[in-house]
Every structure is written in structure tokens, then in C-alpha cells.
Length: 558
Ligand code: NOJ
Image (cartoon, rainbow, N blue to C red; front, top):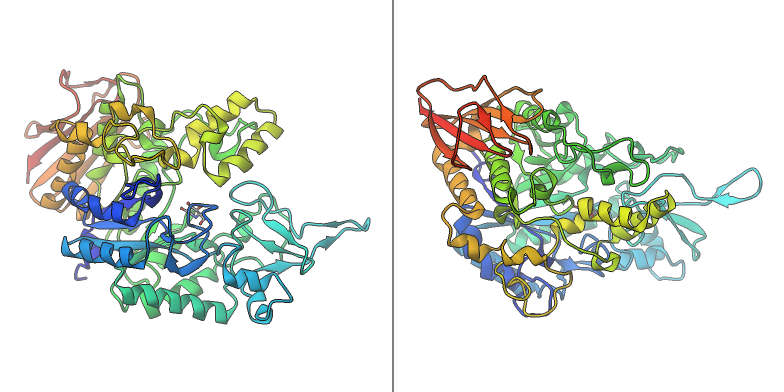
């Protein structure tokens, strides 16, 4: 197969609200991204994915779209968007945007009409969403149509008095789910997608793409995710979009579709697929859940890191896509804790070394990297002390849930500081000035005080910084064509080591990381005498002894 442009891409993910505020109102914006394109280019990235830029009441920071054709006033206007496209294209950078297909805001005109029988367009739009009558119980009580749980906590149903029925929302109650069985809705969505393509976007990251179909029998099941996730029919919808819009326009399309089997992953994004060209999976993202914690349960329950699980998941996807599709590589996005706090260390002593270890461990593997803003300088989880320092809608439903389950305020706060999505959303740390160079005005969420020593400016000046490590690794990916490297993992079951071989164009590389805060002794290093040390994140070395988070890259010529 001839290579497509998106196979050589290095993607940088921008969370608009927190990246760079050009007009000093405390909120990141499109002009702010334009200002920083040279920085993004200096990393070696050539594609930028921006989080939703559409008009929105911002219940979920733009994933609740009110008007698909309008840019949020927080971020600028359509001229700013066009200027971003022009400026990026002039610098050889592609722009992909978030495409939110599963739901709209409850303030979207479709929903305004759908919920109100007196609205002149009610007939047309009512069926754009998913409605169910209350369930009648034998004792005469009326209750929710099902007991399904929303991804943000609480029920998936919200009552609408005007129609005496409930609408479905698998995320927040301000994000009603669309009915993909409605052909008119699909036509309207496709016209909207075409409009952005005509404007010149280079692709889409398709939000929540495996949730488009629901089980319309509405059986009770708790939490019930299997009734609104990965149901076979959602592929029909994606194929329609792929065949008619994505593939004819040579776009980069990345589907957010967790939980896929290998077969299904290839159906989404194999080289013969007509749905997407890449996938985002989360197999390696929560490798430390303590199932015994019933007070802050699920992803909130921080446990011991299962290193084999992380390696096995990465190895699994590399294997699934080898010669059959394009793998993606990322530590995390805006929905996860910061990787250095999560899988590395954010204490002063080991922060830098662990951030580099994480970079070595991932970025010599094959696939398309997606680097999340701030990862390249080792930004950490937030240091918030008050509940109202947090901004995410999910935080508030879940906090109430923890307290109900018996957590103390402090236990609940610690779960938030460890796991909340806000950890990845605090303002980008450009320098050590008052708000970290993000804005001159108080930011929409507080800047981490460690901006004084974790920031771009300081790392620019240090050739061994985390930032320059990222630059070097990305440059190496390009010169060695590592996006297509053949890889072999070793010691998959080893609880500390992260050990693999990657064959580049000119050299074979062996990465050996100590993925833990304990000393590691590894006797069987998979290197022969002709390997030399190419890069390491610490100086003093005994060949078989690795200090906490120590990582080395060896290489030899082919
Ligand atoms: C996935 C997005 O990444 C997340 O931020 C959002 O809340 C949900 N989809 C709902 O759109």
C-alpha cells in the first residue's frame, strides 16, 4: 500500500481552553494556538488536534455543542479559525478537529424543538433524540425507563415535563444523545461535516464513536454500558461517513472507540476499512485500579501499577495493526491524569527522570504519536485544595457519589487530585510568571504552582530537559522511520521492566526502562556486545542495575 500522509504524522493535542490565551480573558483561544504554532513545529509535530471549538454553553468544555457552524466566542470566531488553518498550512502543519456525533447540547436548536411540543419544528426534531416514557411499576409508581448509569455518574435519563418523558444522556444531562436511527438527523450531520471539510480541515478525531447505537429494547442492567457501547449497528453509521466523506477527501480520521476486539479494531481502522484510519483505545491508560475500593470506585480507585498490563496492551495493539492498519501511540489525553503523576513520579527528585523514562518507553514504538499538551515538559496533576478549584462537570457528580458511599471529604478530594480529568486540563506552563505565561488574567482554572520550575522557557534553555528529550525522540522517529518499526517486547510479565527492541531504518534499538520507584536488577539484557549506549536518563550506571525510573536506549547498526 502506498503511504498516506497521515501515516507519517506526529500529532500534538491542544486542549484549547488551557493552551494559550492571546486576548487575556483567562481562556485559551484560536489566536493563542496560532501564536504557538512555531513551538509545536519545533517539537517535530506536523499535525494539531484541537479539542471542540464550537459554540457551546461549556457544560463539558465544548463537547456539548450548541451550534456546529459557529466558533465559541471564548475561542474567537470563524475568521480566527480560518486564520489558524491558513497559518498552520503555511507552516506545513495539518489541523484536525474534534467531531462530536453522539450528542449535542440541550441548548442546541434541535433539542429546543425536540423537547417542546409547542415548538413549530417539534415534529421534525423530536425524533432526533432518544425518548422513553416513564416505566410503570406494579405498585403504581412511575420510575426511570432503565437503571443505566451515565459515564459521568448518576442516571442516563432526565425527565422532560413538557413531553412527560425522559431523554437519554450517556454523558451529562446537558448532553442529550442523538438518535442515529433517524435518517434526517444523519443527513444534517453529514452536511455539517462536509461544511468543515470544505473549509479546509485535514481530518477529525471522532468523539465517542462507539456509542452511536443504543439497545432500543431498553433492558435494565447496571451500569448497563453494553447497551450503549459498541453495538454492531454503529459501524453502519461510521461506514456511511467514511465512504461518503472521510475517505474521498483523504482525511485523517481517528475514532475514539474503547473496548474494541482485534477484529472490530480492524473493522474500524484496518487498511481495508472504510470507517476511520486510526483508533484511540484505552487499554493501557488505567493499569492501576484497585477493585477492592468501594468508596471511590472504578477509575477513581488508585491502586498499584500493573506494569505487565501496560506492556501487554501496547504490544497487543502493535501486533493487531502490524501490516494491517496504523497504530496510535499516546500516554494520555484530556480525560486522564497526567502521565508523569500517574505512571511516573511528580516528586522533585524523580520527576524529570521518570518523565524521560516514560518518553523512551513509548516513543520508539511503531505508530502515530499523539502528544498531549504539556506532556513534553512533564506537567503534573493539579495541586488543588478546594472542591471548587475543580471545573469538570464529572467531578461534581462523582464527589457527591463518593460522599454517599462513605468517603470523607479528604478521601474524596484525594481521589479527585489523583484521577480527575481536570488534572490534564490546568493551564499550559509556558514560563514562571504569575499565571505561567498562559494569560495575564486569572485563568478559568488555576495554574499549577509548580510552574515555577516546570515550564517551557526553563526547559528550552537546557539541552537535556524533558522538552528537548521529546524533540530528540521525535527527530529520531523521523530519521529512522520508527512509525513503521518492527518491534519485539521482552519480559512482558516482568513487574518492573519495560524492555523492547525496535528496528529502525539504519539501526536496531533496544529500550530498557525501570518502570518503578524501586531499584531493578535485570540480568538478561537483550543486547549483544555490538550494541552501544545511545541515550540514557541518568549518569551513574551499573550494567544490570537500574535505579528507580532509570531508562537506557542502546543501538547497533544493521
Ligand atoms: C470523550 C471526550 O474525550 C470527553 O472529554 C467528553 O467528555 C466525552 N467524550 C463526551 O463528549
